[in-house]
Length: 188
Image (cartoon, rainbow, N blue to C red; front, top):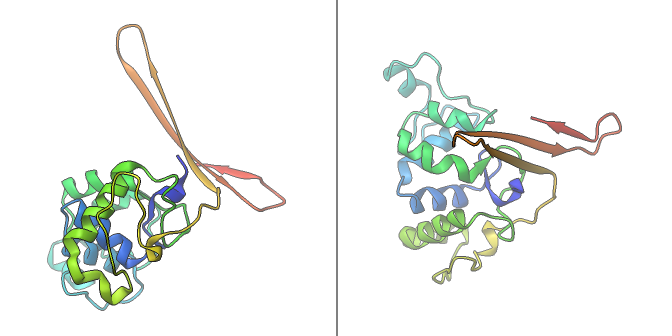
């Protein structure tokens, strides 16, 4: 799976993040919580959470106020439920380095979530230049402001084996290709 088909938690545009969360039924509060977690300031968004809210909730560690280091960090974002995390995790990444998504490599559940979020958001996205929205089919087009082209730099490789007794074994690895003279790629 090309990671450019997922929403980058660190770089993804606010409009894209809000659209996918609305589409998944998580709402505005979830978007504000994630944006507050990753931004560098301590200014609280209307439904977000900064250090004071984390402390009031009994969490000694506040928001990162920097980039996510792993998708699994979503579980520590104040304001997200486990259901929100479970729905969002397969649709996001920290590796694409893009503010939009490449629809040619995006998973269909992500495209559906973004389309539903744009519909549910109504005029919410007009201030960000996302207007004239039409109902999107499974592989339809998104507004240009939410798109990006894959740089073919990061991929998740998933391997699944099933033994005769029916047990399964799954492993995932992220491969990030580098423009470096010392190493061609990183395996995570």
